[in-house]
Each structure stands twice: as structure tokens, then as C-alpha cells.
Image 1 (cartoon, protein in one colour):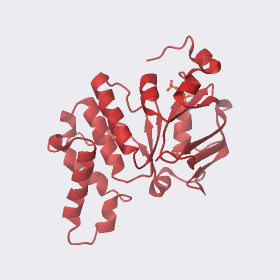
Image 2: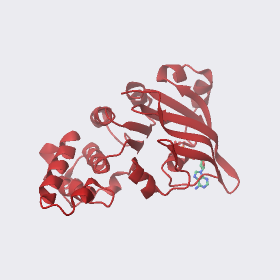
Image 3: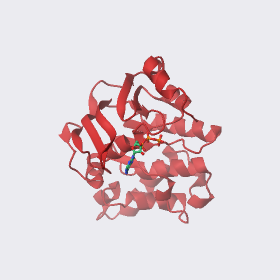
Image 4: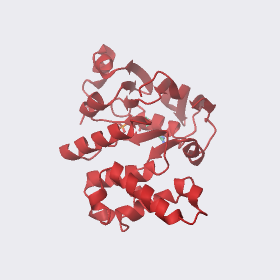
Length: 252
Ligand SMILES: Nc1ncnc2c1ncn2[C@@H]1O[C@H](COP(=O)(O)OP(=O)(O)OP(=O)(O)O)[C@@H](O)[C@H]1O
């Protein structure tokens, strides 16, 4: 479902922190149905751009549109209702609840699917059916009765993604989904992201360039708050400016 139709666009995005320009005139678009990566050396401004796009920060200048609507002035919860959802870190998962209960809770959030069934007599069975679908989608069916705290790091991350998918977002923003993971979990989460992206758009900040090369249709490279290069991984990785920006910087 890779298209050239932008679902999320930013124009002239600038973020100043007390005079320090962390993000400078960034213009980028993410096409519908793609897996798009935001990469760059440490301090390049990736997290700041991510926070601007998910509305956790308000830009000093610039404009953001999602599915053609101007979302620059909206709050995170408002953009979530429009279908642009940020995946939180594992801290968003309740450690003492089971996998199933975590997903049930997520489905009952105000903007979750459950509200549509709130008054129906079969609300609970519909909720459970959907919860099981989501758990299955992230390959946690055999772990559904374990508490979140009993899961491995990678599976916690998968559970956290399931709770985000409960909102049925058209676009998911992931902040370093592979951070702190070993080889096996990276493979598992890569497969999961690939599956999720079959019918939605994914934008991810990622440090692991092997993951980016393997997974992403398009890559935007930031350095010192500005866009350095944009295109396929092969294209940007051969760009001399990108090589120079990464040179001498430590990279995991
Ligand atoms: N709230 C803030 N106040 C002041 N400066 C900030 C703030 N947030 C970020 N910065 C600065 O903006 C620059 C970009 O930071 P940002 O965290 O966006 O980079 P990054 O590419 O995500 O880095 P890393 O890969 O190390 O996480 C850095 O110089 C950082 O110190």
C-alpha cells in the first residue's frame, strides 16, 4: 500500500528553546502506507521533531497537516482522535495487570473502540473479541494471562504497541522502538512493525541503521536541526553529507 500521497506534512517547522534553534525550517512529508524513518546523529533534533509532530511541543514557526487538515494548534488527544497516535514507552503499560487486562483497559479509553459499543448488551464480549485480536496481532496469545511485569522487554514493547493499536490509528509514531533490545527482540518487533504497516502509516525515530535499512521505505536524515537528506535508505546512505554528519559520532 505504498503511495505517494502524503498523510502527514510539516512545512517550515522551527523550534527554538530560549533562543537555541533545535529544529530549523524542517519541511517533510510522510506518504500514506509507508514506513518512514527519522534518523540523524545524536542531538540532531529527531526527538524534538517527533514531539512537534505528535503535538507534545508547539512549534515556534511552521505548520503541520494531517490528512489535509491543519493540526498545528491541536492537542495530542485531539490529533489521536483524528488517527495520529504516538506509541508511548513501556511505562504506559500497567505492570500488575495481565496482558489481556492491559489491552481491555486500552480499548476502554475515551477515544478507543469500546465507546462505540458502550451501551450495547454484548459490549463485553465484543471488547474481549477485539482484545484477543490485538493480542494475536502482536503474537502474545500464549502470554495473555501473564502480568506485564512477567514479560521480556521485547514482549512488553509488543504489548505496548497492542495498547496503542487499540485506538486503531491511521498513523503510528514510534520513538526508538528497538531501544535497549537484543537481537531476537529486534527481529520480532521489526516483523511486528511490518505487519502493522500493512494497513497504516508508520513514522519512527530509530538509531539502529540496520533496522532502518531493512524496514523503512523512506528515510529523512536530520543534522543540527536541519534536513540533510531524504529518500530511500540506499540513496541517503550514499549521500556524502550524511556520511560526513555521522563520521566521528558514536552510533549504536
Ligand atoms: N527542552 C529543551 N530545552 C533546551 N534545549 C533542548 C530541549 N530539547 C532539546 N534541546 C536541544 O535541542 C537539540 C536537539 O535535541 P533532540 O533531543 O531533539 O535531538 P535527537 O536527535 O533526538 O538526539 P538523540 O539522538 O541524542 O536523542 C539538542 O542540542 C538538545 O540539547
